Length: 159
Image (cartoon, rainbow, N blue to C red):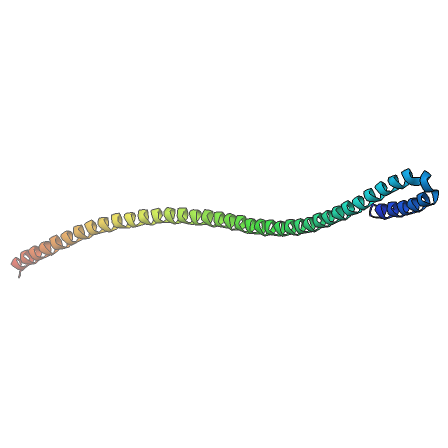
């Protein structure tokens, strides 16, 4: 028998007891008083049972709302986790890109140094070539002067 049925069962028992007390006459009067009190207690129990049932229903409804809220919170946490994973992936990719850029800049700096050394060597070669060209020009001028002097000397010995 469920808790909600107890008061109605007590009520029926009290009515039967009241009927039996009435049949018993004066001897059943005390029994009738007790039956009346039990009947009052049964009615109070019925009201309390209804109140408890209402509270249980309210608690169940609140629990359902709490379950829904917790489910929604779990969904938000899952989305946050997805965002966090995406951000971590992007940060890792950025790190890799930064390392590649750093290596490229280092390589470019090394190549630029090599180019600067090559240009410096070419400048030295050009300077040396200019000096040698100047020396060749001086030698050619001296040869011309010597050739002119020789032509004058040869012209004196004409026959």
